[in-house]
Image (cartoon, rainbow, N blue to C red; front, side, top):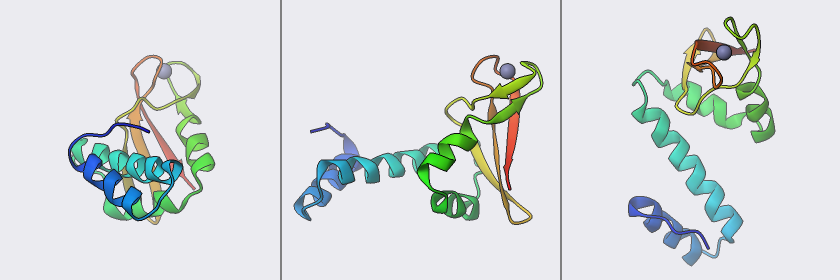
Amino acid sequence: MKKYTGKYKEMAETFRRDGCDEYTVEKFIRQEMEQDEWEKGRGITDIRAVKAWKEIPEDFRELLLHNAFCPKCRGVASFKPGYVLRWDHGMIVIEGYCEKCGEPITRVCD
Ligand SMILES: [Zn+2]
């Protein structure tokens, strides 16, 4: 059983009381943490983008996060944790930094 602190601990306790298994508890809390990370970010994460993002299957989201183009590495790059999501003309745009070299990179989810 994972240990959480603060509001995550309260959430975990509520989920467990409701009879959620540990897998589900962990999944919900991870989602909540991800959302908090975004909100803490640079303040430009768009709630519409977050909603649309959550509708994308998890494995596909992973794929998008590891399939950006880095001009400095001249190839496929992954986002460092702490990326932000923007809503642009009906599409999600991921903005962040290359995990390898730190160059700013973006990825449009079309
Ligand atoms: Zn790079």
